[in-house]
Length: 134
Image (cartoon, rainbow, N blue to C red):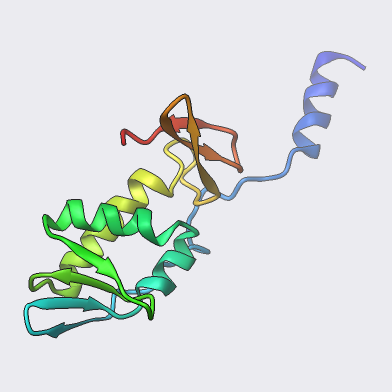
């Protein structure tokens, strides 16, 4: 078997990686105001969809929004200040780009790992490993 035949066989046996993220949809943030606090009602659902630790997502939201907050016993995020769903959606998109979607193939099949004190995003679809810039 020559090189061309081996290459053709390898390509035939390699699973296709769909380069679209159509299968990956994050729920829109459901927010309401409680006095001077914004309550992110479906925060836990969003974290589950992202397959990320709620504390990690909350830390990012606090940094992006420039505020403090906490996760209540019901799994809702409570952020100090008045923020609309559009602003929270922007913060979630930046989280997706930095901590969920692979920078090489664009798929969400990633895991956050710690390596020598650095946070690494490892893609299970293409094998890429990138620093998150934490």
